[in-house]
Length: 326
Image (cartoon, rainbow, N blue to C red):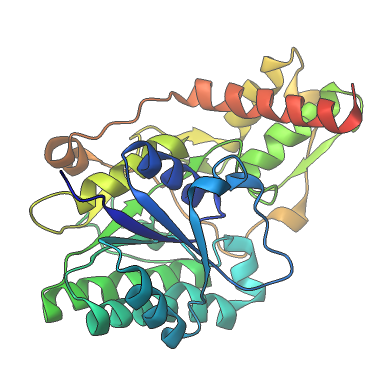
């Protein structure tokens, strides 16, 4: 009888953590989720699977806590999804972002090295590392040029993963994920801000939606598709880094257009551009080339951009109707 695999997920209460936990449970894994001991932990995204996972207290600021968790639970795989992951916040909290998103990766890699270097490690890298892009589309060999403290911290996390892989012969991979969204996105992210705003306007709760740069373009996919790639990376014969993307780009304006169209409204009647939501330094055209993931992993996105937008709007309509007892 095959031994049940065990996975540790940091950031399990986040969007990606919740989808990954679901996926791994379906694959027959025992799932350990690390959470920070805090009075404000939000279990909303994992409440439907909370009785199926083991939640443990730990912190990327504290390597000793990471060592204790690894020693107690002996996972086969570790997925590091925890980060200060909102780009806008990284300008107002640059040092905190560096501590969590950059040095936090070092602490968990070092804890693995100390406890059991055979543990397979996944690092959540980001397309924000490309920032001021050197080439379009971006692939694994494209040089990084981050344009935010978040992007800079992710570059550190990426290279320290490569360094530990090469220095200690560890099975450590980085997934360079381009924007991936879902109905579980936080309201501070523009995609969810739009879908939630559209639902509120449709239900008569708001009259306008204030946004920043409507011409900003992103390569947007569905988070549920992207977490499968994480697992695929850790189940190859050799560790490597992969770009995960759809290879198609859409503007914020197009996202608005589709979202408002879905409820029979014209976005031009409701969307207001607001300087307050402009970034100090905007990234250029982020569009990923996931050829390596397609050919080596056999991964491809299953959810179209149009399906993603409709899914998010429908979810927010449902949530708001429940909240308003409509």
